[in-house]
Length: 236
Ligand SMILES: Cc1cc2nc3c(=O)[nH]c(=O)nc-3n(C[C@H](O)[C@H](O)[C@H](O)COP(=O)(O)O)c2cc1C
Image (tube, rainbow, N blue to C red):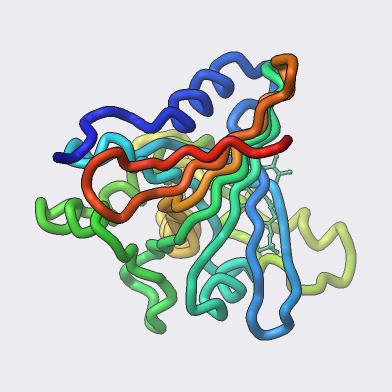
């Protein structure tokens, strides 16, 4: 029998994010490049939690990126497609380190296949019901503000510039259809660079510094049916 309830670590994460003040939903995403054996980390926005009804305890963490960024190359260089997401929640004094496999869904119009299909039972379940990640990509793209959308309409992220003032030539806002100032060319260019990045968690290290004595729990995903997450109590 499959466990029909959400994961304890995920409930704790959602509760902590609700309690957080200021910049909510910011986390750090670590990648490991196989090419230069170097770790890389940067901040990301958690845009959504996506759960398939058949797998309530196996949420996918959704963020987004520009398909041209170095992190995409780093992820693709690593055959395991493993990443780690790090959340520090000041309001609750908790740290979550979520290690998992990543999927990347870019524009289907890209000539070279830049994405990574999600592998595993959760993605299989979405696929078998005809779930369309392209619809999700467009929905997420349209849900951000016009300033944010303009950030996917710049030259290749991480490429050198002659001066800071070069940026003055770039679009400041990219409106969506029906909004004032809509420019189809800018909109399509930004949409073409916008990609979904979905993390399918495998192991979660949860540290609670808000309780005394402090607690640390490792959640290990079980591949068999039954209780989905094995909990191991660790020395903090
Ligand atoms: C608060 C904050 C949130 C960010 N959110 C994202 C995000 O959701 N996606 C993203 O690609 N970059 C985001 N960035 C920018 C990245 O941290 C990073 O600078 C950029 O993606 C290039 O990373 P890379 O060169 O490692 O690929 C964010 C930066 C900050 C400071």
